Amino acid sequence: MKKPLAVAAMLIASGATHAQSSVTVFGVIDLAVQRAQQAGSSVTRQNGIGGNQFSRLGFRGIEDLGGGWSAGFVLDAGLNLDTGSGALTSTDNLTTSGGGALTFSRRSTVSLLSKTWGELRLGRDFVPTYWNLTGFDPFGSAGAGSVNNLAQGGLTRVSTVQTAVRASNSIGYVLPGLHGFYGQAMHALAEGNGPARQDGRYTGVRLGYARDGWNLALAHGATRLNTGDVTTTNIGASYQFGGVKAMAQIFRDSKELIAAPNRSNGWLIGAQINAGPGYIPLSYSRVSDNSASDRQAQQLAVGYVYSLSKRTALYSTYSRLQNRNGSALTGGGVAGVANASWTGLDIGMRHSF
Image (cartoon, rainbow, N blue to C red; front, top):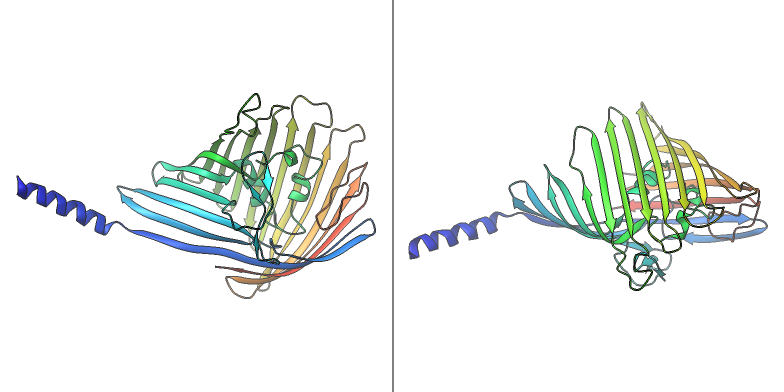
């Protein structure tokens, strides 16, 4: 009996020895100087969160479990480079705490992965409805030209929830590669108490197709609130032809149980155009709500990203956001003023690792 047991122990030890695992450090260091103006107010400031990509520091690990399965984790922390602190954090799906400490609030997940069956993901993660906004924005939703100045600005209902970008306590599933089709589904628990114990619960899904230069995706999500659920739907598309990547998206959200304004609609068209050692991002976007005055805002943004290497770039972005009919949106830095235009100029440097 001892010999078979010894052989089994040797086989188990051999399997453990050959299991492969790795941990990678990754991140983005992005710092811009921004000049922002609106209604006579102006500010010149450093934007350490990122004007081209969001500043972050992360750790990614993967272990081969054999049989086509693997286990993995991602810990991703936002950075404020101008002060050396961590970015704002969301402790749950209802409240935001102040920045300062370095926390892995961008993403903190553990996963079980299979090339055949896809990925089961647990923890704090980006919601499916966010990916269309950033993926089909020529500015990647960062800096003065971000589509989120409108798509998640003060005219929208999604701007009132903490699950607009990420959700805590989530259970997610990511499709494997299926001949160009891709997708993500998520359900995030609220974990509250009392009559409003379901406040902050999020459910969302995204399905897309990318092939032969085309990329098209549709997403829908809902955040449960005792005061009325907030739902958001968006669709995005892009097409790569030669040195031009054209992009477009449509977004809509609404809130139940309240009178107007309780709904907003918007869209974006834009492109990334190869130019020399870099590219030109440009976009035009609009948003409006269903208030009695039909509040509206539009944004025109253009920039240039000059690549010094595969990892390092210099960039500049100019954006003008125009408010109408009582709208008071702002791109940051100064307080929003009704019917006043906001302008922003970013000049910065980004390095990824």
